[in-house]
Amino acid sequence: MTDPWLRLVLADGVGNTSLLRLLTAFGSPEAVLASGRSALMLHLSAAQCDALLGEPDAAAVDAAQAWLAQPGNSLMTLADDDYPKTLLEIADPPAVLYCKGRRDLLKQPGFGIVGSRNATPQGVRDAEAFAHALSDAGLTIISGLALGIDAAAHRGGLAGAGSSVAIVGTGLDRVYPARNKALAHQLVENGLIVSEFALGTPPLPGHFPRRNRLISGLSLGVLVVEAAPDSGSLITARVATEQGRDVFAIPGSIHSPLARGCHALIKQGAKLVESAADILDELAWPQRLTPPSLPEHSTDPVLDALDGAPVTVDTLAQRTGLTLEALSAKLLALELDGRIASLPGGRYQKIH
Image 1 (cartoon, rainbow, N blue to C red):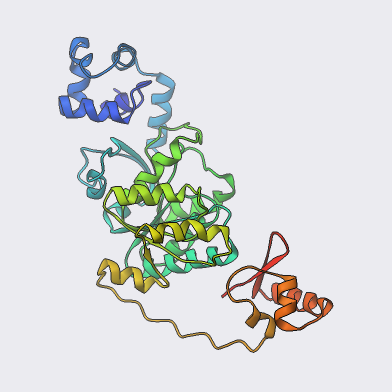
Image 2 (image 1 turned 135 degrees about the vertical axis):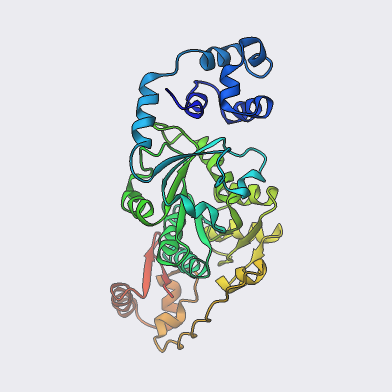
């Protein structure tokens, strides 16, 4: 016999808003399925009634049941005791969540970290460092498994005590993007991957804004590390504000396009942060961090000339007084040593 929750979520054309309306009206999936067409028509279209009252898609049901039979896989529903209380606070909580990995992490306090897919090397390092520190302080790091900042946040979260949860915009029988397959496996082993979308769901553009509301919904606050003015991370920040969550942003160079989204957020009231301790202080989080020792001042003229913002070779030549030949050799040595990164457009940035 098909699980009543599966019957509901696999009914073609019956989305989450309709499911919430039905559950509010009838109280349970069993009561919904036991209702007649006339009662359902008060809440659904004719096509939705046909889908709900007809025979379920046998192939979809079999695939879901086979997936749920695998170790670590489960379907979390609104009726479950461990359904996250923070999600019950948002306007449209998902009726069900497909979970793969450590489901218990959804009971822990979470913190969201998001940002650009095309992050700078410094942005990636910042995201990973902040995530690691906040995870060690006892927060579970929530992000979206995208390239760039999201992936760095997950790595940092997994490295700390609080671990990490990925909220994705596809079915859990696929990994998107494919380049994060190894990271997804680490999350399954030591963290958690969650989706409200049925198995087989492809990465459609409209799914990612819906995914973003869950990242913020599961979090006490959200940190934006790097974001262009049109970044999807700003959607997450806006939704977080609407949900009553704190929004934080790391400032950057006025010359960097990836800092403009963060600067816009700060102008709109997001909290400017320079360290993980700033976030913990704002959250009044009980566990404190050990402050890191300050790095010694560099005696290398090229490193000293790199002030944090990406810089061109011509600007470095002016600042250091080195010839282009000598400067190019020095830049190559520093890059091979992992102390600087080369960026598009012939620019360089120091890696702290």
